[in-house]
Image (cartoon, rainbow, N blue to C red):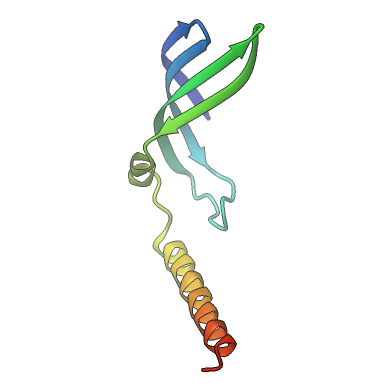
Length: 101
């Protein structure tokens, strides 16, 4: 993984940085094992610095950009959808049982 800093602006309370992360997905993430997919994600961080120490960082990025650049295999998306559908049916069934229907 590499992080390229494009812009870094100092402010009286810290700074703002514009960056791009580039990486290769090789590990597991939420049940989705890496297949060597290339990832590119641009974003912005806002840094709050007190007495020379970083106290807070807020990161912002476009999730649509992430989705366009890093799409899981179809079987993974279908497995997640099936899991959510089954959970929804179980909740609906439990609610009906609780209401005596």
